Length: 231
Image 1 (cartoon, rainbow, N blue to C red):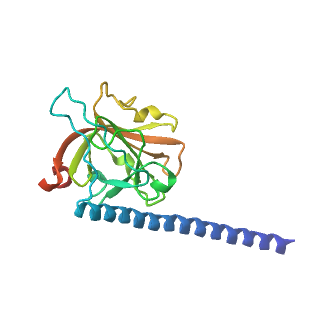
Image 2 (cartoon, rainbow, N blue to C red; image 1 turned 90 degrees about the horizontal axis):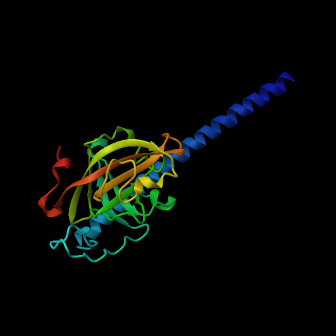
C-alpha cells in the first residue's frame, strides 16, 4: 500500500511539473510570436510610408467653421494604420495599432475599437491591448499617470495626446468609457480624446483599467519627432 501511495505521489508531482513546463512554454512561445508579429506590422507600415502609400490623414478642424468635412474612409479590419509610442513605458516601447479588437487582431498589436473616432478626429479614439500574454504590450499600464504623453503617427502626422485621468478600474460591460465623450472621464463636452483599455488583474480579465487623454498637439512627420519623444 505504501508503495502504491508513493508511486501515485511521484506520478502527480511529475504530471504537475509537466503542466507547469507546458504552460510556461505556451506563454513564452505566444510572447515570441506576438513580438515577431508586432515587429512585422511596424515594418509593414514603414515600408508603406516610405513608398508614399499612406492612408488619408485624419481630419482636423476645417478652415471654414461652417464647412462640413467629408467623412474619412474607414480603417480596414485587421490592418495596421498607426504606431503608438508611450515614453513612460520605455524609450524603446512602440506598438502597431490595427483596426478591430478581435483576438486575431490583438495577437498582432493594439486594437482600435471599431466605431470610435479616427486618429486625431473629434470624438474618442479608443484602443485596447493585452496586459499579459501575446507579448505583454500593456504590462506596465498601471504606471501611467496624468500628464504622460501618448504619441502616435500615421506616417504623415505626429499626434501627441496627454493623459488626464487614470488608471480607472471598471467592469468589461462599462462600454460608456469609449463613448465620444467618455463617461466618468471628467470631460463635459465634445473634444479630441484618447481612451486606452487593458485587462485587470494582471493575469485575469474580470475588470478593465482605463486611461483617458486629450489631443495636445499635432505636427508633420517631416518636421521631426515631437518633443515628447526626445525627452
